[in-house]
Length: 232
Image (cartoon, rainbow, N blue to C red; front, side, top):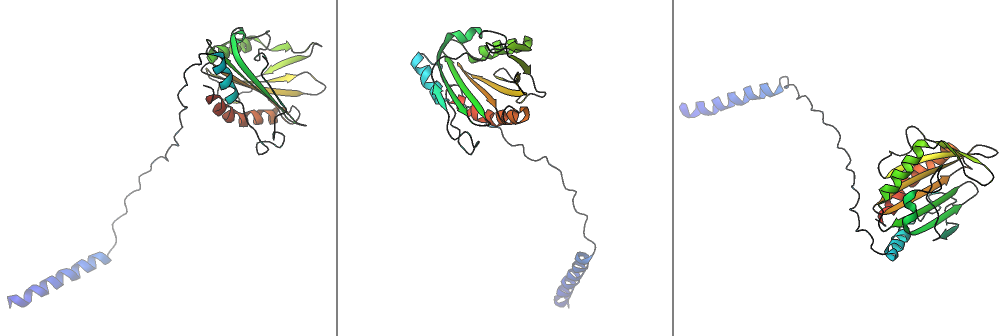
């Protein structure tokens, strides 16, 4: 008799287990919220060794020039002209920034269209860190509100958008100007410093429209940052 009871007992256990499985299911676990992953920010490459000769400065300055095409803007398919003549970094209300006189190499590119105007200027120094030039410009802007920019007495008024076009920092400065003319005309400037080099971009778009010019400079900024890394 014992040999037949064992299978019946197992059968009874299976039936009970089946009934339990068909009953109400256990409450699901409360889902745990987790913050979405934060995209990693690629750190800038390390600074290159400082140049030791004027020839090295000039070579690196040339490497930092922007190549814009028609995909960036229909009127930037090619730059209008390029020059290695010394042009002063922008210095509102002053003749020049003090340390800019110690430059060892420079290069300028201009883009001219019916609605757009762009000027890129890259300057290199053997002994002067670019951050010093940025500090000198920042000190100038702290006091300068208006200045005469032409021989016929035309006046420029400094415009500081709030918030700034880009986060200002020790090596980044942005500001705009309203130039006196028959109608409001605006130009915006970006100055970047890295190592012993400074990159300046002056820009206007839509014939000096402030909003369009600010947007243009914001689009140019990441390209300028990448370009300057080729010098320093």
